[in-house]
Picture 1 (cartoon, rainbow, N blue to C red):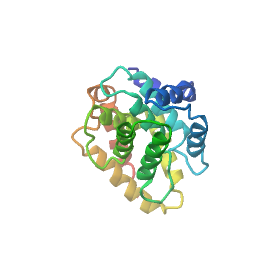
Picture 2 (tube, rainbow, N blue to C red; picture 1 turned 135 degrees about the horizontal axis):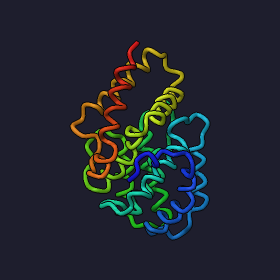
Picture 3 (cartoon, one colour; picture 1 turned 120 degrees about the horizontal axis):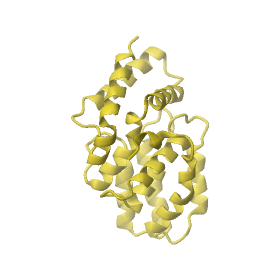
Picture 4 (cartoon, rainbow, N blue to C red; picture 1 turned 30 degrees about the horizontal axis):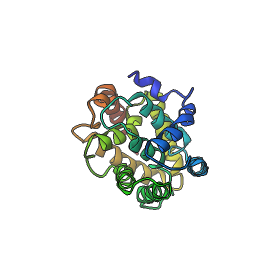
Length: 219
């Protein structure tokens, strides 16, 4: 995988084109979900979002496109990527749970068998990043979501600015303290990426990004 191409702005949004139709039909939905897709895209396009936005969704789906050959890649993972940040209310806990609930409800309404809808629900919950993901599908999904940590320096720095913009209401000193703690939490993990593919591609650069960000976040 050419890791730098994952974060290139050119063509990123084009990944959205065929992804929804492929994932939605692949999971067994009995309708095209066109209106639902528009609703999800509208959520990612909310003006309060700076990182958890259409750009992030497009990067995730573009990354998925490059790893569809890996174990765990499935329509369930692709659908989970669509929904993983579908609900994102700044300062309100439980966004992932509400996103997961929406995904499960929408899938059931579209005629998807309950077990598959439940698996997507669990996959979305894995993006809370509170536990080591279990199984190839969850590992792949979480690695895609965390691929931003291993982005080229310019994109990683943009990501940090985007996160700060989302929390512009938080005083600078408090934001820096809490953000540093979050990033140090990632850095202190034995490995950042659960799949060999992402470890080889992004682990080293992710750790360099995190070291630089946490070391420079004092004040």
